[in-house]
Image (cartoon, rainbow, N blue to C red; front, side):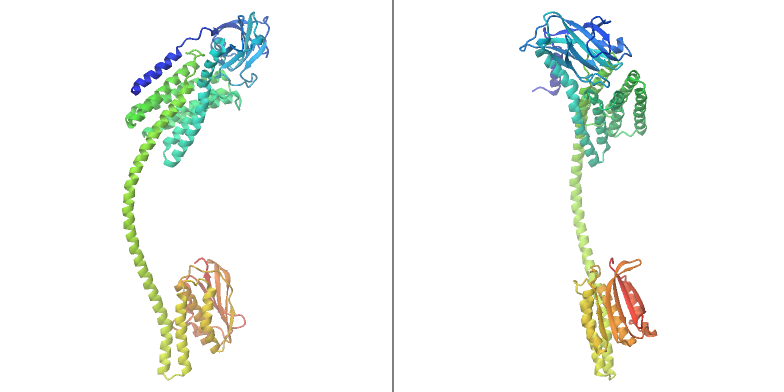
Length: 614
């Protein structure tokens, strides 16, 4: 079993051998012909002012500043083609758009050759030579080229069997167009995953890596998008921003990956990106030659900025795990080498027919750094899992302690509530039942009448029943409460010769009122009726309910007790525990509003407003 180093050497060795395989003997390269700059859309005549030309032809070097429509003409020897062995023409590289004409007939086209022309600069062109267009004498091949300065040019043309040229064309198309297309899809997936990781982990390193991938994907769209949606200069500016922002974003990502705090560098690289965008935006308004110079300078700058990010990763190499270091070396170093290679093509230091390799850097760097971030995420996840185990043990321990504490609190709360309820019942028994029994005893001892004794004992029974009724947990409605009270008080009123008017309507339930609150309500009603019997000399008593609004309390249940007696006597509020002050105190304890007023036409009205939100 071979090691990984031997495997890498074997892979790159095979790739080198395949790249050095010579062309088949049947394939020939056409490197000389004639050129005519002419705006016509059909091949010009031979009598035009053609000039000799050799391929590859680089307009930036030989005809700087020239753009528009031009014709290349090549004389081909007698050719024979058949269905079994068809011939083909292969244009490996041209800029910006091209058409192939054979013997005056249109053979193949890459797209639109009127402004704005199709962006076919990165798409190789392959055309099969139909047997019907070939002659046994000389054949004429015309190439129509439309380009923008300073990007014009045409590589050497290959002529040979379709079986030989088709695989070359397919391989070149895959490397130059299909890979950038696939990377765009991969980039979209990576950006979504990074955004999800950033949102779930609150770690900005994933967000910045997603931004790096998105920036690179934007730059790579220029390799495969042929029909651009905007004007050419606007499109060039947009796609170049993808590359120019790549360096600054790599720096921001690297700082966060290795935990490096350098705010001044962060601000500096962002300022570089903004300045580059503004400069190339201005250059785009001046035309392609100026834009080409500015964008080339921006590309060199972003390579330098990106190199700083690589240096920082080397400096802080120890902060990466061994496996992360392997991915970093492969992805980072390979990206710089490929970027320098394509920059040399753009600056003219390498021939224009040399294939662009930078599209390979996109998936290489994306996969490498995605692996680094995945390792980082897994390490963080494992640490979090270990911490969770420890935390879970501590939580269980604290949970047990809290359960014991809560149980003590619940026991104390039950004891406290029981003591309060006992105290309340004892107070009510003392003030109500005890007072009535004491009154009955005093009447007996003082030789009072039998009716007086019976009345005192009935009052004691009524007080006891009222206390018992208030303990019913199902009673939440004031109407039900008053109905229970009515059964207790109505016989007493008849004995005193009072007419009882009942005007109780259905009102909302009041679940927030407990037994003590309900007992206060019943005591207020009982107190009001008792005052009427003792002090008013009334002939009738009316109890009414409804819903009303109160300032500061909102919607309330209105409870009203009124009579047709003599009004408010001066001593009505002076009796110990039996006066108006007693009712006011009870109303205050349950948050109710009490009002005692003269009734129109004579008598007294006691109104209680019970807040529904209590």
